[in-house]
Length: 301
Image (cartoon, rainbow, N blue to C red):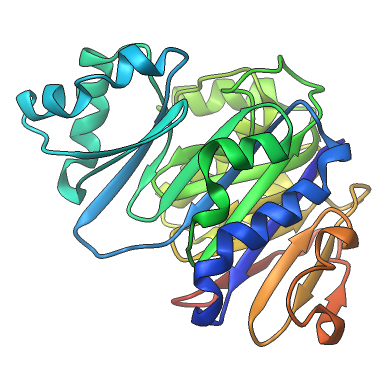
């Protein structure tokens, strides 16, 4: 049992409040998963800059002098420290290059997410503590997703927390359990994907990344997941400009959505949505089994 939330803003006036609204939604879901928590915040795309969120078990040593060392490697960077995480801003053209550089100069850090839009923060602990640790309430953006975990498939670790990101500006949160993730992991490794954990949810994220690399949009990739992934699942997925939702054909994991002129919201339970502005007049519904829902600031899936 885990708790999932998602918020896609239509109204730009709400963008400064994204982190605050999403934090309240996630904290409300604490009793669905007290092991670890995480949030992905999307926003701030300028077409020139990319961001890489990294995590370290020893941030004082790993983050010290990092900007200077990256500069020596030919990658000018600005770094914002946030507890055990740091957000590195670089030229978008160097997004691939920085991965190799970090593996060389800071082999112990782990990349939580990267792209032009996304920042991902996750750690072991309660949602209220994770939110406070990373200053999520003060963050603005266009959309975001969050997760609080009750571990069933793998160890309680930072890397095992959600969201999982396996492609630029892509991430996934999951409530459920996949039965064919080991076979699918082997197939994806043969296709060139790599994995940090044994978590079944990371396999789902990598599956979507691989499918989108073949030219599918998120809606098409989620539709394919209904045939290719076995088990029980509710997925909420973020992309650079939108987010999608899908439930398995049995749909035994709880889910509720709400839509107004200002936003689209997702929660594992309705109580995650009750404090959103205008919720009393929102269209509220339970997403149908085996049905893909997708909203995008640029286009429809």
